[in-house]
Length: 362
Ligand code: SPD
Image 1 (cartoon, rainbow, N blue to C red):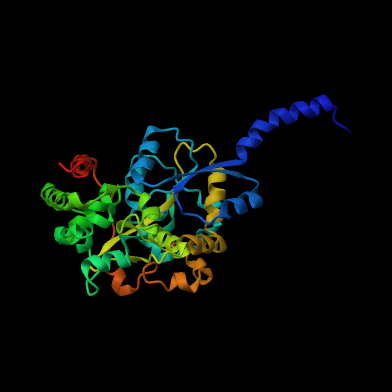
Image 2 (cartoon, protein in one colour; image 1 turned 135 degrees about the horizontal axis):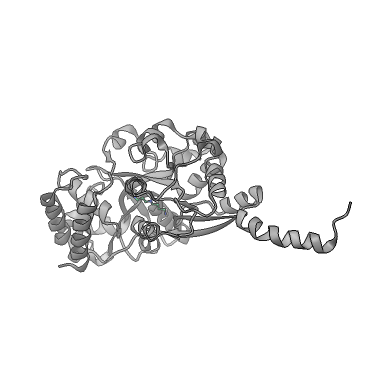
């Protein structure tokens, strides 16, 4: 029996808003953190459109989540922020039945991320990396000498050394938790210390190098390193490799290198999680499950040069990426990496005030 046209149109109109809503997922990820065609592939395979927004700082994500009604279905905070966000009830547990590709995850990464999310109940790793130093090889060696050791935080934290680099431009991440952890570690203190005395020591160190820092920003250094505007940046491993590739492509002879300094560096994990008030929960699971497919995870890592949390993807990752010790650090370097724990709200308040003093140079 044929449906009368008016009835068919009416039921279509009723069905349309629901369908349109079902066909969307709102994703909030770090900038420069996905292969060019991943979203396109996801939509082609699932029919789900992706609204994709980017950020460059954990603090920004947290502010949006705390404000509520962010509208996001999938966000990607780092483990040490995720940990306290879970405690604050900002995320819903993952429905693991909807994530069969969880079986592709690297068990060691699952174990490490469980320190932030017991039982891996609320989140799963996308990528991981380190926070170290990116530099312009020629500009830095010209100023420090051909024999200078460049695999050291002295480049940033020793006032006499960084003073020699001030004229070619020094940038630091606008990421207080990470900057203070690096400063504490450099001073031989626990990077996870919440002691006020240690905080004061880190602040003193940062103020001593402050006159030589051109700016604090968490993504501007990518372009600036690549085009020779700055010569040293505290930055994220893969982002420095983006600058390196851009410099090589420009063909102006600018060579950029990334180092995990010998004193040690932060190892972080960026985690897929679904906000408690996400409007499209099923689509969020579909998106995360897609991102956990080995071919997709490998394509993303091959494009952005960050290590994947996906063990099954490893055989599909380009040799030049998986054999690069700055991306997949060998055991002796890995032994020197430290994790960062969630800060208590009390410490965070002290940290924020101290950071304002450092940034304003007072
Ligand atoms: N462009 C992608 C940058 C990803 C950086 N994640 C940072 C983790 C913070 N510790």
